[in-house]
Length: 174
Picture 1 (cartoon, rainbow, N blue to C red):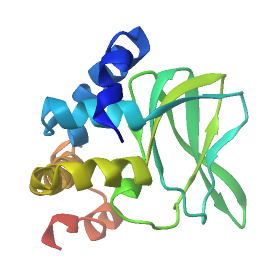
Picture 2: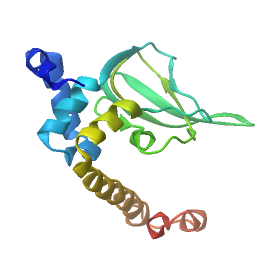
Picture 3: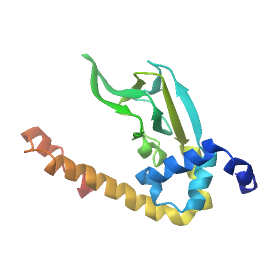
Picture 4: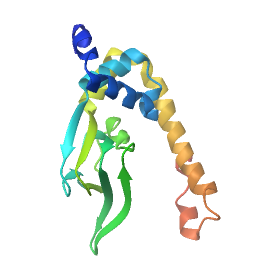
């Protein structure tokens, strides 16, 4: 990316909004403002219609999605059919892990309504890291902290863990 384009982009309210959004996402909040600006320039807005797939189970998808407007549902496809696991809506960030590693999606994410998303690709994220290599350590710390917060919530966020849930904890022991 040529940073000389920044003055033109800085005039855009869309660009400023993208900076604001990225700064609120924990994975990116540890980045310095200059890196956020690069990421905002490289990110794209996409529109999805109701029932569009943002990503599909068992396919590699190298994008993360911030929902600016609309709703999506997370679906697990099994031999018995679809199991709707949960919904996501405005302000949710989904798929950040895919920016760090190209792995197959474990779920399908489908738009429930028309949606507008800020989409960050792995390529965009890697270009930002290449320009600011010093932020990699902070991002890794944030990923570890996020996994810890998730597991802590699983353990202490319920009145008690069922026997099967107890076998599922231990992610932070990696």
